[in-house]
Image 1 (spheres, one colour):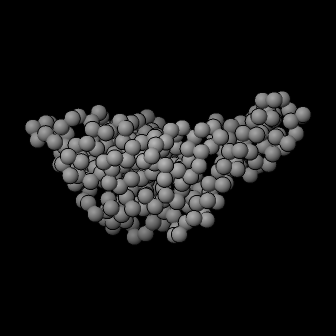
Image 2 (tube, one colour):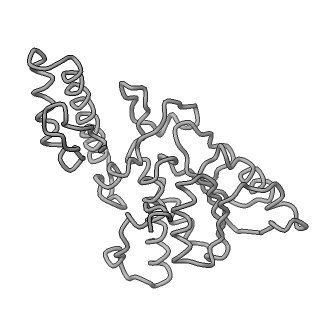
Image 3 (tube, helix red, strand yellow):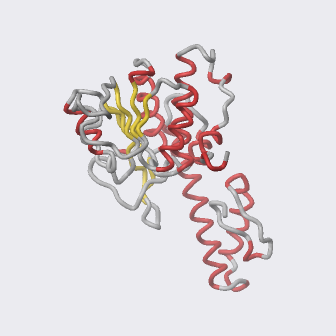
Length: 269
């Protein structure tokens, strides 16, 4: 079912996607404005659709109004990936990146901050040879997208299984490596990688959600670090940037790999 739910309650029985949000909003307004014609559940559906539509448009408008330069991708693409959708938790570290709290308790990340952090991190990562980059991606969706990146850049090192203590600090370990920079996809589950990188003075780029701490992370990328589409977008952007750096493309418009490639799970191929 699409993010806007289903119109089955109205007898249409078809999913509504963000591409159809204008129609959905119009119908939702009718549902919420004429509760006497519908059941309580149907009227509630209309109210929820109105709220979600308004919140997404407000988020988009906020991003457009506050942007001081062009985004890495169109605002719509960020929104479609859900990269701005946080969790129901926040802390002092991430409060400055949060735009608002939705009625359902979900914190929404500021699109402008996401784009700014993404741009800074990508520029920083371009300073390193591929072989000197280690990506720690131990959760399923991050693993999947990181593996797709490696198909383009085979010399990039990725850790997709549990991070073994000593990986960055114990030369006697069979898992030992000495990267020049580390990317962690979830600071909570990959905190040992951050600790060891800090100990050995390796800079850390971290994908940080609203419920994560930023301690030990040198370059924060505020984003939804749990969603398949949002993680795919990050690694797609990284692939595009590295391709440009190495001369594989001369401009962004020449990068023809669809984001959906990074979204697809291996078992779907």
